[in-house]
Length: 114
Image 1: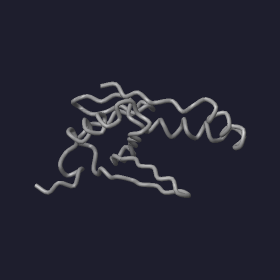
Image 2 (image 1 turned 90 degrees about the horizontal axis):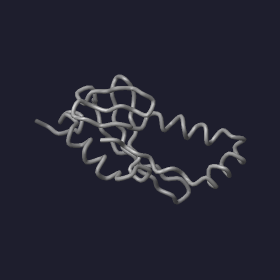
Image 3 (image 1 turned 90 degrees about the vertical axis):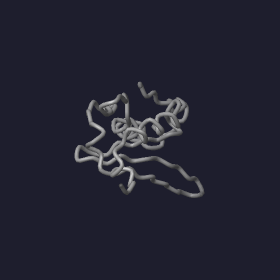
Image 4 (image 1 turned 180 degrees about the vertical axis):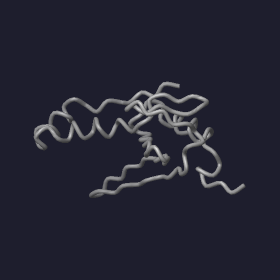
């Protein structure tokens, strides 16, 4: 399954670029490198090119951030190779992507007791 990112509006990126002297758009693109690009039965490939098998993930956690009345949510998949972030609202068919990941993670990573 290919995971597609919903692009941020160009005018927003322009404003962020102006107010941060070009730093914010660069940081946003760098952070997106830890997002999934491809999902299959064996594991996933990040946008940065890292291949991680499902059995390598050790933890699946929900992260909620609140800043000045705005709340955002993401899900982090932790492995020895690094953290993969799933930002559902920024992905096309984000709920389906999250469901696919949840179905393929080992029980111990999801916190399910056997």
